[in-house]
Image (cartoon, rainbow, N blue to C red; front, side):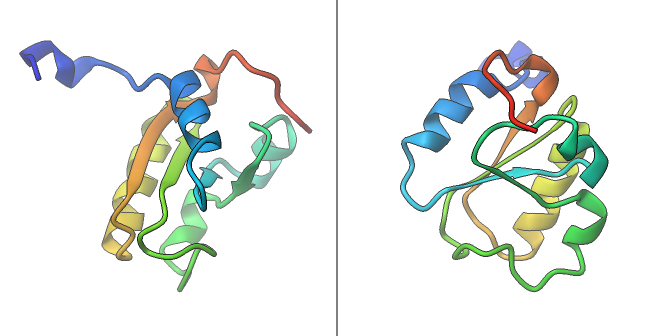
Length: 106
């Protein structure tokens, strides 16, 4: 890892493809319900950031791959940290839907 890798943003498009090929994985959109209803990545579930800390589970095992996104990547970074504190050990912040080039569903 080079010094500039710290500033490199995740490639949400590659990560969504990785999610689709990962058995038992969860794709979590941590934006609010209204944002989610306005368009989200197919196959994702809405787990708004403010509700995460109060949850006992997110519906998958603690070892399952969990891919987290929001609009720009800031909330998903916070959500990934919350999920890790909850014991999920395979969490990946994949950035923001703003960089997503695939189809969205409503």
